[in-house]
Image 1 (cartoon, rainbow, N blue to C red):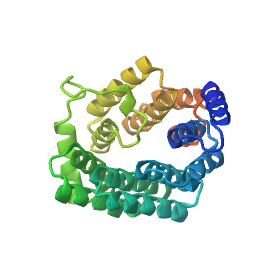
Image 2 (tube, helix red, strand yellow):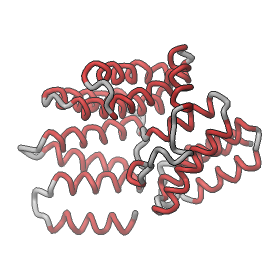
Image 3 (cartoon, rainbow, N blue to C red):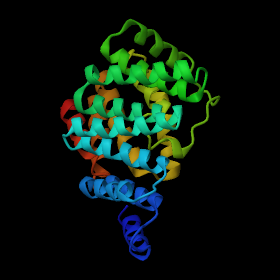
Image 4 (spheres, rainbow, N blue to C red):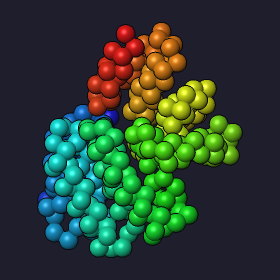
Length: 275
């Protein structure tokens, strides 16, 4: 990550007064990975301040600002950024981008405020795709995210949907492919399948699903993903009563702290739960 930041800094310096929005966005994502959230937000602000920026770039910058604000204790400001992103997507009649922004907001709200805050947002995304893009991959994604949050909230329909997500998953049988590029996203379906299985006490299936993700991440050398998966394994092993294994996974997650500082607090909390 540090090497990538040096390269991005150099590229931005040589690009003049108006660096390309995609370069600034890549820099911002690298800054988030390094735990430099205020600097990442400033990079996004530079994108939004440029005249004539494409809507796609504005949406991506606003989504990242929204996530950053939720992570830094300013969820109301984060929600404003998400609402702006959704509004821009709607102005282009872009259901996919609008849904992705809604799901980002839902998951950010889930992390910062719990299921009560996240569930209405996930339901909004689900209803949008059901009416505007039924049967699409985006609709399936929205259903996956909603099913897990609804399961945590104890919504009966969510419990049934979570059961279906585990019953129909193809990751452990090899009928559903998983690409390394999918894994950094917090709403990649495999995560929700694994968490659904864990919450439904189908622990063997949860462990098998997360193991598929870990294998792909190890081959790709994705440190941030491996740290996140270690936290997920920690929580799973706590549920199974395998506390020694849980502590080992929490320590594994903390081993990545220098590379992925934003994951370290979650690792410490999970490790404390295991104790």
